[in-house]
Length: 381
Image 1 (cartoon, rainbow, N blue to C red):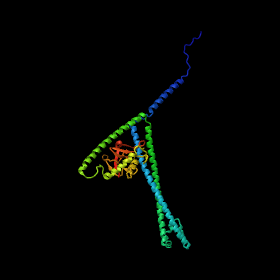
Image 2 (cartoon, one colour):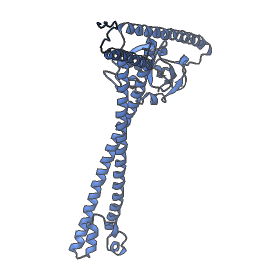
Image 3 (cartoon, rainbow, N blue to C red):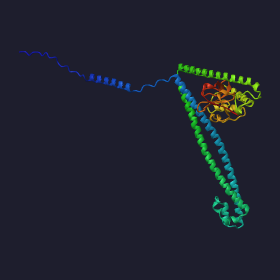
Image 4 (cartoon, helix red, strand yellow):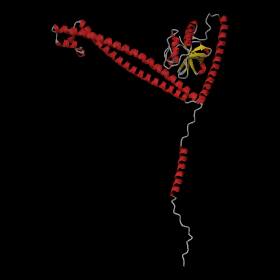
């Protein structure tokens, strides 16, 4: 009997491992990407133009503060250098005088040696340090009054020369510290300015235009306040002029007080403003005092110098000179200071306006005193 054919479907021999492996890898990749997306820190939002403006203004202000620190360190360094030079010169003169006295003592010793005097006397005169012999009464008794005076002078000069050398050494240490502070302040200025320039360079053309528009609005508001101050001052001056014939005191109509009142101050102020106007258009350069460029306190110092008044170098020192005046009583020539840290200054020209060296990248110009927060004002002279 023939064998019956089998109807069982033959088993297919195939390898399914690769398919399973690919599926596993794909799933793992999706899982990994999902995990990374979930754990990745969100990107920081781009700052608004208003935030950029505040940041740039803050950086320029910080650079202004660092500039005043630089000016202070530079002035201190120059002053200390002069002091060190004077001390070194004085020490050299005392050394020359000491050597002259030493030679005189040496001639006495040689004379005694030739005259057969005792050897210790010659040793005393010729010794580099004769201090150990000073208390020997028998030796002093052998000297004439002139010789004794020469010895006394020698001792005094030794002490003075040593004191001058010590003072010069201490001054040199102070000078070194001032120069280190100067370098630090310079680096701080450069760092802040670089940050501001970098921030501005990252803006698109559209963003720069929007930033410029914000600046125009800020300037317009500052000018509006300046116009209001000018109106108030004009009314006050008119009232004072109307009152003058009644009182008939013979005094001027100035609204200020103290040392700044009268025609003498007005005459100086005219010279100050004439100088300041002539500098309009020149660039702001931190640490500069003219004549081709200025920083804020460098301009005010130079302008008042043109009127015969010497002001200190920094805003921090200039604010202490003269008479404090209120904003309402400002007169042309007065100095107006800005910010809580007194890091900026301008020269009031009247009508709520000032002439100042604003910041890096800008030129000396006229501007409303309300463009920045006012700290206070001073009338020099």
